[in-house]
Image (cartoon, rainbow over all chains, first blue to last red; front, side, top):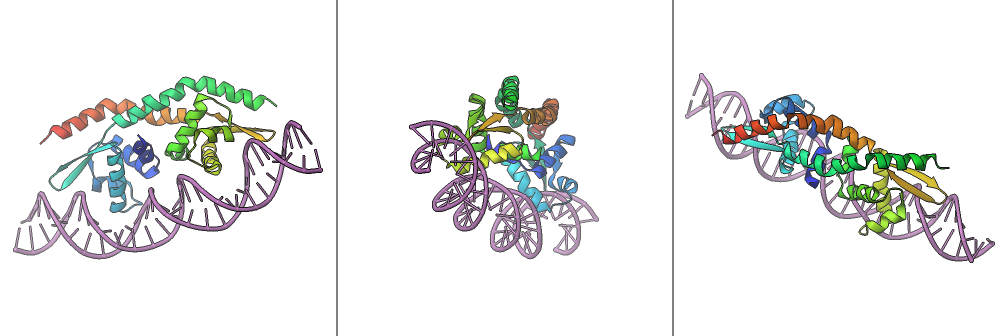
Length: 103
Length: 103
DNA sequence: TTGACAGGCAACCATTTGGTTGCTTAATCT
DNA sequence: AGATTAAGCAACCAAATGGTTGCCTGTCAA
């Protein structure tokens, strides 16, 4: 869980996820073409982190490695975590409002 | 947006948010009592980051500073970001399955 | 008005992070 | 076989992060 949050914390990695959402199953070099301001090794490192977090799953075939989005971990975050805040949203907002108004 | 993701990346900070979700409007020292493995200054720093990200709003009154949860940024993440993945979830999953099965 | 309590500031430290360059391995094409 | 293409490995670097200690400021109550 922590790995997922940490993986999502970097803009470059979110870009990679977005690229995969655009077109799933891309290779390293294809992804590199889209993150032009980084070397291939930089991208490799980020992909590694995404993979460790379970957000990306890879399949090697021949000399290529294809990257696929795994939507499950993000979903778990949405359910377990965001859901809680969603539930308390109105309550939190009104408490905030009251605190700000109170002189 | 990036600030919010980064703020959420740390377990301690998520703990602080949870503590505030438990009881909104706590002071620094009250929050410190719940994060026992950190000094007050450590907690202060984390709260600062949460505040910069807009996740926490503070009100000072007298010598106390009260911390309130602001659910809005998390909600924006949920809508703009999680929503996209949710939408493509099934598609991504089936692509993943196909890639894994293909020999 | 003196003390105690809530919090802020600043300097400092170790570790992690994000990124690089250079070289190697492995598969594919001619 | 030789050249090319896809990816991996390792060492190294600067900057950011997470945390600490020590001291200062402001507020409240006796």
